[in-house]
Image (tube, rainbow, N blue to C red; front, side, top):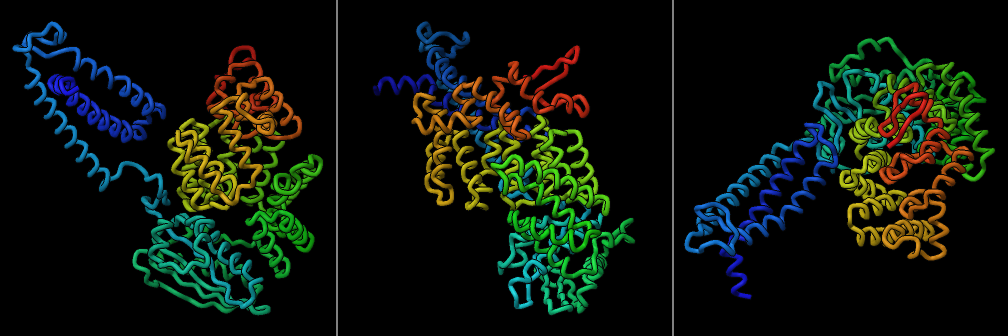
Length: 598
């Protein structure tokens, strides 16, 4: 054995192996850096890794089987050891290793202090433009009545909405700002977490028909107060006060509202303060996904104030979610809810053609009807009015994934996470987009972050476990699932079936797991149950399911050239949408009204 190791050393096998590893590492770092700027395909790093892995044993074999002599490279068996220059070659390999290591150290130092591209784990709003970045923190309820919390939150949001109309401001998203509600954190830390230049904080004291609002403008980098003011008003003056506060802040920052200077929110105002209270409560219930309560409150608003556009908009919004949150097993009730949502959205738009909430609800209804073109028009119109609205951006990402425009979904999802880096549901949109692109390694850090931010959200846990599995961390995936206290046993069994189906196939599943597998799209793919899969998809379309990200997942690739897949996208009415709006990433037109998918 000692003689064998000595021979390995003499033939520079160890040096060649070490040099190969170091040079390969440098090459991989280079590919990682240039991939995004040069828009190189996402599969390139995997291909490079595979090629380097294949080359490693070949390099070792060559270093063992051949020797370098003055006559060139000859087989070791035929070489005269007296003419071998392996010692001199070994010194050159040493120089190569030292040079490569030096290059690697320089690279790491440069990337540490001058990072290339975005940091995945800490995505912040883009403040590199000339816009001033600002965040409105939740105003504190000083009324002494916890039931008035919705009013102080509503006041915060309305000021945020007015400031968002200022073209010179980049306003942090509502949900990220509200993540700091009730937390007594240093203002500098909050400003850094939200990636903003200024913070607005304040308090609201409501007493009968009067309201006192105190607000402060704080510089995020040092925590010093720049400006503060207290306003005492009658409750009926609340809308004018919202505009007044927003303009005072803009004036303090020496910013202009530009062409919107004469605009006001008059179309969204009401003198019926009782109805306004109900509206704020309905909006709050909707945000917390208390849909039955939101429906009841919003309907009361529309009856009390039939000309109040926001009331109809929030009613439409709640109705468009009702099928998934209230009527999941009641197709007739779901259809009725969508019909009512359509009518409510149209009423809101008659009163306020620029109601982004109503446009978003309308787009969601169109989507359920498989009217993809009309849905896209509504989303794009909403985004033309409010391009940074996270709710619309999230829904639009879902839309693009559903219609097979996955590449187009990526920048939208990235923009969403840039605006709202602390919101698990928005991180989920980016995770799903990377998953649809087959880039599981890019999805994993965001899946981990959404899991850390929302460990009590069931599907965040299961999604993180699935991404761990797809990235080869199978044991950790099972541990994350097993250790969760929020995932119910039946859902844990579903995920375990998902794992076992890939690892053991149909024969490795228990009878209970087989029953689960036969109703799960992805598991059917892993089990190669094509007929059962497409029968299930057709049944879902027949029952009114509008389709999801699954249709164009990387897992469906083996089936995309089959007649069954073509029939499925026709059932979803995607072909007629593509002919009007442009084809997706996976299907292309052919002659005589034909098309093909791959």
